[in-house]
Every structure is written in structure tokens, then in C-alpha cells.
Length: 102
Image (cartoon, rainbow, N blue to C red; front, side):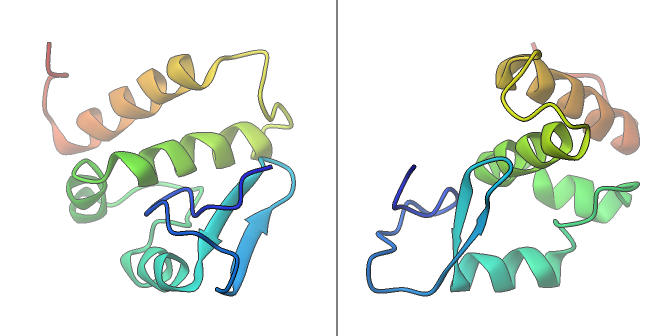
């Protein structure tokens, strides 16, 4: 398993870290606070302002994709992360009323 934050890539040797043992994702304390205050931990509906903000942060999209897979009981499979990100992107852009970029 990784010893770096999945969001900012910070080395977690000396920092308090949080991990999702189901999806194997690590977070440093600063990124944990950021995700909490921006509403990125919700597995429910994504509000349009949160979706717009999330679209600017690919690392958080990867985190959310892994959490959705874990919540569905399918961490790491049978859908690949790339496929799931594609589904999440469709949902995010749909929430924003926009077409997916080419």
C-alpha cells in the first residue's frame, strides 16, 4: 500500500494519515480537512457548486471513484477505475448541465 497522500502526493511518514482500508486510499490531515469542508466525502447527490469545484481537482475525482466502488462492494473491480471515473464524470457534468469534453 502507498505511503503517500492520494490527493497531494505528500509523504505520510511523519504526518497523521487517514486511510480507507476497503479502497486502499490514503489522505494526509490537510487534504482530509479540505475534503470535509468542501463536501467531497458525500456519497449521495452532488450539489452543482460542489460538482463545479470537484471538476477542477482530478485527484478528488479519483478518490470519489474509489469510494463509490468500495461502497458498492466492488473495490478494485470488476469495473476498472477508468470506467468508473467515466461514469462519475458523466454524472458530474450532467449535474452541471454541461456536455462532456471531447
